[in-house]
Length: 342
Length: 297
Image (cartoon, rainbow over all chains, first blue to last red; front, side, top):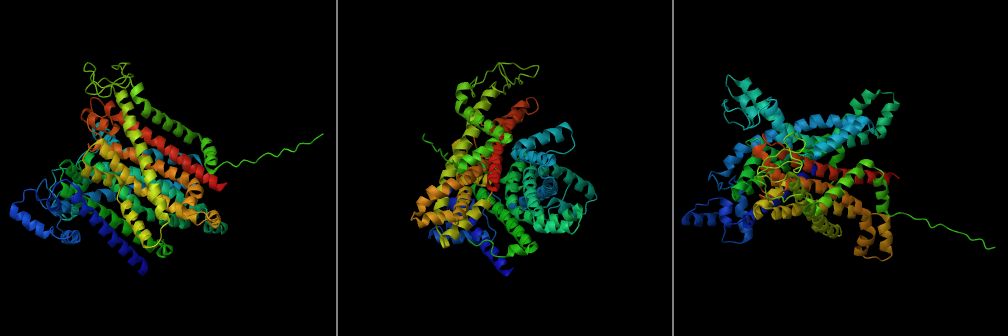
C-alpha cells in the first residue's frame, strides 16, 4: 500500500506541474500582455505594472517566471478577474462548491440508476431485456445534453410545472454562505424555514442533475453489464453453484460485490466526462457554478479567469480521480501491486 | 485418359474481410452503416440537392410550421425559421458542417495520432514513461473543456473549433495506438519476422498495422460521435460556428428564443444530431461486436 500511495502521490505532483505549466503557458498564448494575463489587472498604472513585472519576475528567464507564477498559485493568488476586477480566488470559492454539489448528486443518480440496470442486463444476458436496456443505453449516450436540457425544461418546468427551471434555490430564502454546498448550508442555518428551503433546493437540483446523469448512467450500465458478465463466468461462481447456493444467494453474496469493485475503478474517468456535461448544463439551467462562470468568461475574453478556471476544474477532476484510485486499491488487494509498470 | 487432379486453392480472407463478413450479418450494424453512408453522401451533395439557400430567407414565409402541420406548406417540408429560411436546406447544409467536419477532424487526428503513437511505442525508458504520464494528464481533462480552452485562445469560429477538436482528439489516438502496437510487438509472429531480419518500420507497416486497424476504426467511431457532439455543443454555446452558418448546434441555439411559438426550430436540429450520433455509434458497436465474435472463432 505504501508503494501504491507513493506512486499515486508522485503522479499527482507530476500532473499538477503539467497543469500549472499549461495554464502558465496560456498567458503567453492568449492575446495581450503576458503579465496582465497573469494578474488580470487591465487598468494597472505604470508604477503598478513595474511592481507586477517584479512580482512575476518578468525580466528574468522563463524558468524564474514559472517559479514566480507557481508561488503565486500556491499562495492562492490567481490574480484578478479582468471583467469584474475582483480576486478570482473569492469567485472560485463561491462558485466551485455549487459545481461540486451538482456533479456529485448527478454522479450518485447515475450510479444508483445505471449500475442495477447493468446488472439486470447481465443476468439476462442475450435475452430481450438485455437488448432493450442496451438500446436505451445507446440512445441515452447519443442525446446531445443541451437538447435534453431544453426538452426537460419544456416538459417538466413549462409543460407540467412540476420543477423549477433555473437557479439553485428560490431567492426568497436567505441562506448564509458557509461551505457553499447548499444542502449543508441550509442544515447549518438557523432559519425557521429550514425544511421549506431544503425541499426547495432539492426541487431545483433534480432536473439539472438528472440531465447530467443520463449520459454517465448509460456508461455505468455498460460497465456494470460487462463486469457482471465477466464475474458470472468466473470459476468461483460455478463453485458456489455447485455447492447448491440459490441464484439469489450467488448474485447478492458473491457476484455483486466482485462486480462493483471493477466498476469503482472507472468512476474517476467517468467523472471527468460528467464535469464537462455539467458545464453545459449549468449554462442552460443558470446554475451558479464554475462551469457557467468559465463559459461566460470566454464570452468576455477574461483570460485570467479562463486559465484559473481550467486549473481549478482539472485539479478537482484529478483529485476525484486519485480518490477513486485509492478507494479501489483499499477495496481490492489485487490492485495494489505493480499495475502501472510500463 | 489423363486424369486431372484439381486442387482448390484455399483462400483465407484477410482479418479485415473476416470482420466485414461478420459485420454484414448484423442487421442493426448494417442499418447504422447505411445511415452513416447516407450522411456522408448528404454532406458531400448538400449544395446540389438542397431546395433553397441556407442563408437567404423568404420574408413572406416566416416561421412556417413543417408540412404535416395544418398551417404548413409542402414546398417548405420542414418549415422555416424566423427569417424565412428553409429548415430542410439548413439541416442539409448543416450535415456537411457538423457531420462532415467531424469526419474530417477524426481522420486528421487519427493519422497524426497513429504516427506519433507507433513511434512512441518503439521508444523505451524515461521518454516513454514521461509520455505515458503526460498522456494520462491530457486524457484526464475532458475533451470539451480542452476544446473550449483552445477556442478561447484562437477565438470563436468554425475553423478554430475544428482545429481545437482535432488537437483534443490526437492524444487518445496516440494512447490506443501505443498500447495496441506494444501488445502486438510481444506476439510471436512479430518475433518471427524480426528473426527474418525485418526492421522495426517494416514490421510496423506489414505485420502490425493490418492487425490493429479495426481497433483504430472502433476508436475512430467513438471519437467521431464525441466530435459531432463537441462541434454541436460549441456551436450551441456560441463559440463554434457563427451566425448565419447552418451548423446544427448553432441552428438550435438560434431557435431558442422562439422555443414556444416555433418548437420545430429546436427539436429538428436536435433530432438531426441524435440521428448522426446514433448512426455513428451503431457502426462502432457493430465493429466491436464483430471483433469480439472474430476473436471467439
